[in-house]
Image 1 (spheres, rainbow, N blue to C red):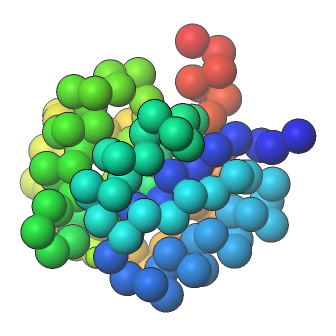
Image 2: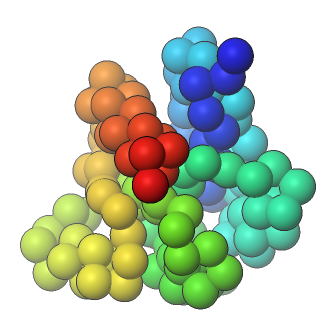
Length: 125
Ligand SMILES: [Mg+2]
């Protein structure tokens, strides 16, 4: 049985590959999207339990993508992945509806814990 479905959104191929490989090894089903629009388009078909969303992306950035995700799926937990995790940025993201955030470069075990917490919280509610 799958541990849950994770939608990874990052414009960098290497990041998508690392996360996809790591999360698949942990038993998650993973869909890796390279942009906000691709992530939004896959919601209906992939039906993620949690989203790992990069903040810094060209065109539609993580903040705009977060706003649209929250509008479309208010109960879907979104974990932001941010390179500059200063308190101003992170508190803004949480105010916009992000469930959590992970600083880049990420600690994969920490990331796994954060994903597990959000997936189980979503299943309990
Ligand atoms: Mg990026």
